[in-house]
Image (cartoon, rainbow, N blue to C red; front, side, top):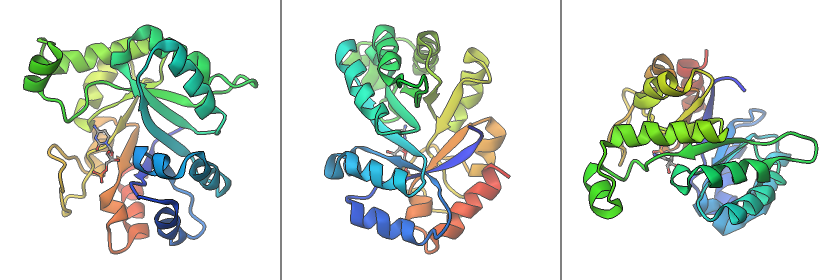
Length: 232
Ligand code: C5P
């Protein structure tokens, strides 16, 4: 899969999601479904959106013992999703088990990426709550290396970290990057933001864009602006 824009469908239910997508007549953007929508609507929302022709990033960030994650990933893989994720802090055995679970009978599998440290965790909380005393940048890169060693396809990170991740883990290791804002847009609660154009320059493979598209006056135009800046 090449560079693409993934729309974060942070809606509370299927009705709101489908109403949003109806304006995209004919276009089939790559969509991210997170915990809010998945826990409200269950696997049915994934099946509905796949039937409509969308690629799906199922953002459920799994973290449990390897056997449980392996079996959970098998259930998600059967939904024919295209991209799923987990927490790298679950360790290499958990990540390897996840990959095994994702393998379908025909030999295909969804792409699997890891969350390193959440962007809501900073150096202070990491030291105080998790007793991790290394610099957070090093922790992020170490977790990315662990994901690579386990055989994963990439990580979720800031576009500002894409270069370092690629330098450490190779160009083919995917960086999927949220925190995207247009140069003339609202930041909302995101602190370190990057425009789609800069994310492209920084080497991101996929950008995940929520409110700049979902809350736009004209969501289709906002989506096309992302594509024009990031992909074309
Ligand atoms: O609306 P916005 O563009 O900020 O949405 C970004 C999406 O990416 C949300 O679904 C958010 O949960 C997700 N995300 C993030 N930062 C991370 C990981 C995921 O913003 N580090």
